[in-house]
Length: 302
Image (tube, rainbow, N blue to C red):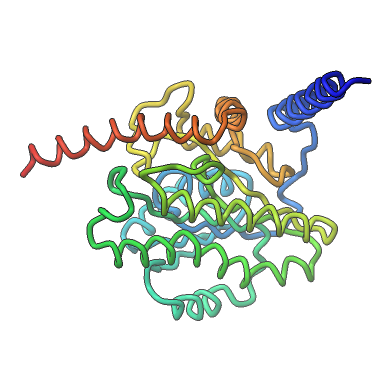
């Protein structure tokens, strides 16, 4: 067999493997009953968007829920909404600002002591106000500290607190919300992309460590979902509502990595086929346009 024939055969095998993986991600034939993991679910960033949708959906599936977010009033509103819909559900709220220093984790540890947490959803996160070059971001030092503490430290610390008990019980589920922006370099959202990239690799590494010990750990890397964080207000084919997205994502909890939604799987698959230089050029073009619109709107308001 000549070099070209060998190269062609290997290329075909590679394409077929990638295609098979893509189809498996879409279909996810292996399902598990999440109720076997425990009585309680803990959700961070649970007053809006994906986090709130997880809290309500897990309550619907007979979990008691621990809601952690920054604003006490919003937590109380979500707790009331859950208990109005599902009167048998116990709801515990913990008001925490994840941009503060690591002393907050001692309080969380005390608040959840003795509770059988079977599901952890590490959802809390912050992004840019608008796309911007890293060196030009306003209040750069504060911005950097807040994003790393909220996006990175929260995931690592809560996992460190809760995972050991799950391993002892040989059951549990941890879903760490990354982003499709964490799968590839994302210019003009560099720090956000980097923090989400950490979540993705951290989660997939732990998934390989823990699956034989009865604990599922998932890197969930969505594309656009209707939320305050994304700035999208109207649902579409590529931007589902948080409620629709969460139902889809919960059907895929056995996957160590997923975007959680079928159109996002297609988006991620196409992006993964592009050379990095081309992907970067497309991202720069699109996000530069978003930046220009945001600055124009901002200047009008001044």
